[in-house]
Length: 277
Image (cartoon, rainbow, N blue to C red; front, side, top):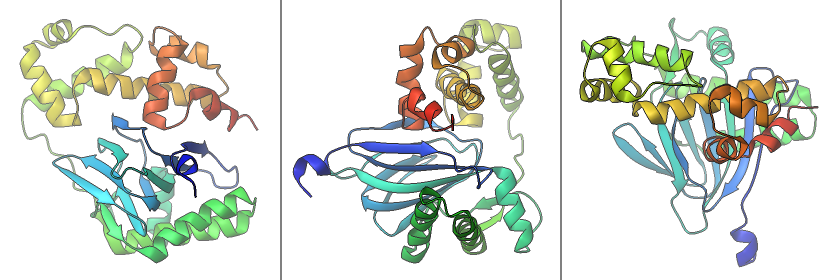
């Protein structure tokens, strides 16, 4: 592989109609960095080349070839290259329903399943994840579904347990949850931090501290991520990127493009085209 080829970035983020409840991403990133964000569902990613560096709450982990990265829903994280050549990976984004279905099939403990490890060395599991992608890309629904369920069952049986119920440890957690609800409701025209704190009867610094503790990021970062998530749902239903940008509160389509590409890994136009079929 030449130097130019080794530094070329590419990505495909798509859905295979025969695998409901799953998004697929295969990519090679060199300069691209993912800002702090979270997912509605789970992340199961096989690193196939280079090094990925993942920033998680309280720690940073590095994953190389043969590693599988496991991230639970709503866990804030960043990602970037951990080596000059960047990293390549094949990622599965299974929905909560898909994970719960497989967990029930294999007799996992009751409760919401969650991964108990961030990165595991599992060359066989990593190969199986890449094979899910190959089967889906070849249109082999029987193989893709079989391999997918096998991978999910493998990861759940080896590296999962019931997610602990979130307890409200501090009084500020309730304010943080109310703040999130306000931002969800007024996404296109959100209040300032000072206005939001005044509405909730607290101070800006107290709200900022509580929000960071509850969601792992400050309100403005969370809002950008939430806008991108909502834009994705609009694009999934066929909304044009320019319309989606305005609907979620971005100033224009380039504003959406910038944040969407950084968080999702592909531009909104490419994302929508993969769903148009």
